[in-house]
Length: 336
Ligand SMILES: *Cc1c(COP(=O)(O)O)cnc(C)c1O
Image 1 (cartoon, helix red, strand yellow):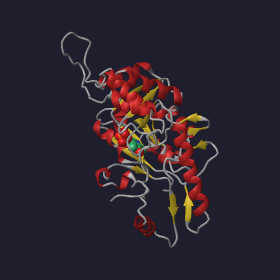
Image 2: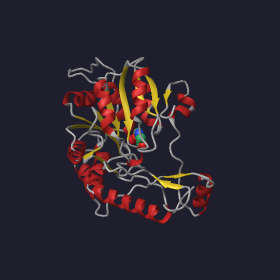
Image 3: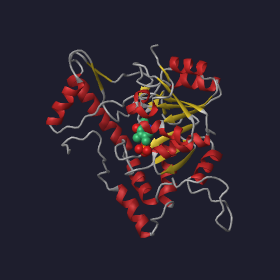
Image 4: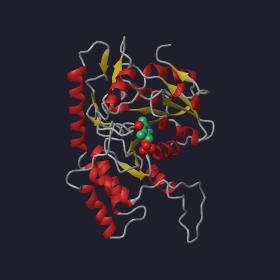
């Protein structure tokens, strides 16, 4: 199916910044992974969001995987993960042979419910890490979640794949936890065509992630490996697109806010239709505009009408505890 209006299509800068960075890489024959665009992108992204250290990787999923590994999550460890999210938040828990426990979201934030998290800590006190998500560019209510993580001495990973440019109490999401994850997949607010970045305040952990994601090659004359390696680094070409896209991030956020405000103004007063929540501590990037439909209106009917007009729309993510693949794992509800 092809649409006239897509949900979230890539949008390169009018100025052609991305091409300039790519052409520079071509000129220098710096096509291989790593190079000036990779280090440049890492630095510029970290500067933009106010993170200390960053590693550019092949995807946001790889970044979550590396965050879990850096947090010391391994076989049999328990990891709390937001239930209402895209499966890529949770899959890396399985890559590490760890055990996910899914935590419900609430209506006020559409993200992790602190009460459900507290209940989860009571039930599973030996948890290793918590993955909190900022869904559709709305930030979670981070303070109570952080407080619980600190109290229980547990690593907090922020899945900010959808929320680059979103702030919580004036500070960019992705910079509150021990680790923050950004995605530059083709459907995100800015894209590199595919990629991810892991940020952290620990230089030592980020250096370790860079080591693991370039096949864990020991500093030896011969090919020697003392640890399991991954091929997870971002390429220098892809990073060039990212550097160009970073220059227009604020423009993209402004446009997404305009789109959101437009829908809300035109449709917000209709019975049975509610838009995503707004909270005074949250300045979203409005990556996607999402509405909640109740009463006699059926989401599928609206979707069918939009489809007939060649406008793309989707359901919200199906929660992880309802996924056949994750059905055996525990779920802590917010309203139980
Ligand atoms: C897109 C997304 C990811 C994964 O990012 P990729 O770069 O596609 O691997 C992870 N979590 C959430 C919430 C996402 O939306």
